[in-house]
Image (tube, rainbow, N blue to C red; front, top):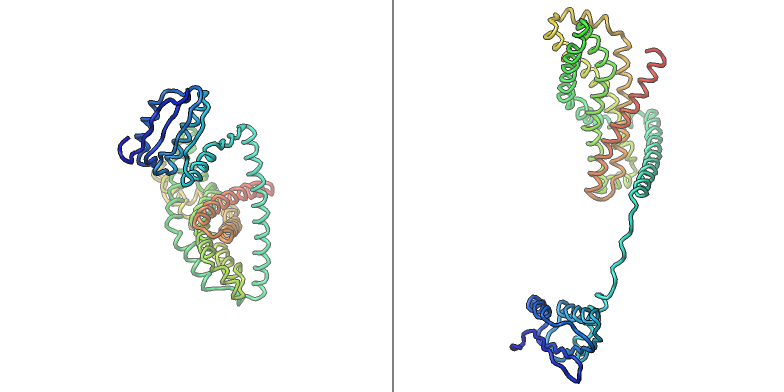
Length: 376
């Protein structure tokens, strides 16, 4: 025992082991006290903890004393505590009570049942999301019908701005991607058809695949990732900043103000982008065919004219407004569903891209089946 340092002494009194504890049992003395307590011999019979010598006690010290009491009790000793002053008693009792509480048992998880539950929850969430999106579709259609009776309500300035953003500004990336895909189609077509001496039919392959499927599909996917996500982020940020609530407070319809200009812009821009993508895809495939099988531009155009019909071109163009409407619908819906946090904006933006691309591919498959059924 040195001054006011934490100390512990052992003695025997009337065949009862006595542990006298005193000094400053605080956090600063925990390391030294751990070593002292580790050297104590196991308790047997009756043990008394005399705490009358305590001068300071904090939570760490109280926890050490209670741990000592529990360790002695587990080894078969009858432990009694005496000399605890009223200043320290509430703290010790609270620490002892907290230490005595058993941790809740871990829940046992069954992998199979958890997987099935997860699939069920995801299915229910998908159904609710589909119902909400269908309801939003109804609201948009009604608003479009109302605006059609009063064209002056169309916000031309906003629509032209978004037309530039989703159409004109998207031309470089759309043109580059479709040109490169055309190059790949041309190269792979020549490489495979050369085995049968039919390299010339690479022109047919490029023309039909680009005009019917690849041009519109690649354009729609890029617009969904570029513009659909932008719509969600823009409207979602306005939702977080309570700007959408301010629009409602002014007596305006957020669907009419925010949603319709974006959807109208996509309805106009996507067919034009598809036409541009078709040209770039044909240019890429034609350039590769000319290099690999020594076709002249005139021969390429003649073969292309013989291999495609008017409906080959219109099949892709007809899909464009539908895909544009779906992308705008999903992007704006997810933006309006944002709650008041930045994390929600990111989550809804990701969801908008995924749902937009998913719907584009589903409807593209439906169009393919329909056109095949009617013989186009």
